[in-house]
Length: 210
Length: 69
Image (cartoon, rainbow over all chains, first blue to last red; front, side, top):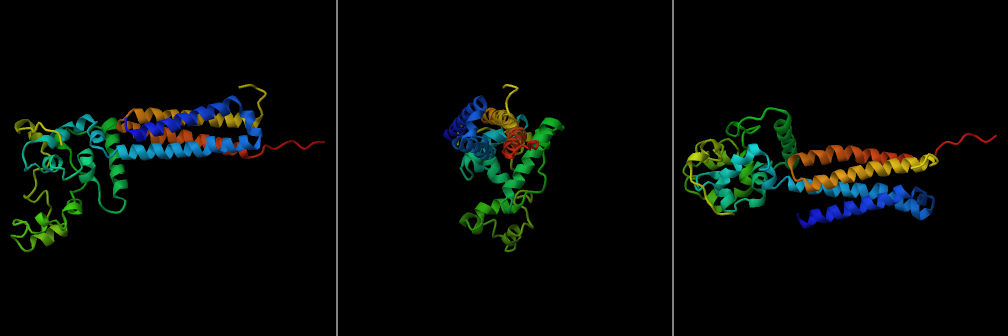
């Protein structure tokens, strides 16, 4: 368990103990000091604990481990270990082009205003469908909306390999179209092998750990 | 808890019980690292916390006493 989570649990347990003292002897609130203690213990500390807990859960929800904890996502986790550089997600994960601990979140969040918030809303929808709806087979999962180049350009824009790449510059209009999201990076025949979970049984896997 | 407790103490106890339940929910969620724990933390703990805080704030409002004759 991370140190941060342990500290939050310690603060929460301390708050519970202090509330227990007030429950056992509510008459201590008759004094001025008791009233101040009640305000601290029954108002400020619970709000602080909730804030810390919610923040911790939000951070944890960004982790690769968290995303892959749903069974339906397991093939997508396996696709990160494909031993083939043409697999876009695997190449990014294995070469640390994205943080390995936040691989899913880094590519699937929205790098616009309220992007993290929208990602969380999508996450809530995932959880709803997973527990209360009828989730599709892993290979039939689709994005809610077409993948926006903005998410790729968040890192690649300005990079030498992107700006001066031979293929990217073979057609003088291509880079402009990619930057304007008129030609998709992942579905226009260029980098379209992303997760491809339907073919995982036929490809070689990389045994290493990033 | 005794029947002789005044309304203020009763509200403080109610508030304390709700807040303890909220905080215990948080501890469970922090140990139970699954996607559902996030929902439980936001929804169940959130509701218990709001109720607990409301009970505490209500306890601050002085009770009306019948006029003395």
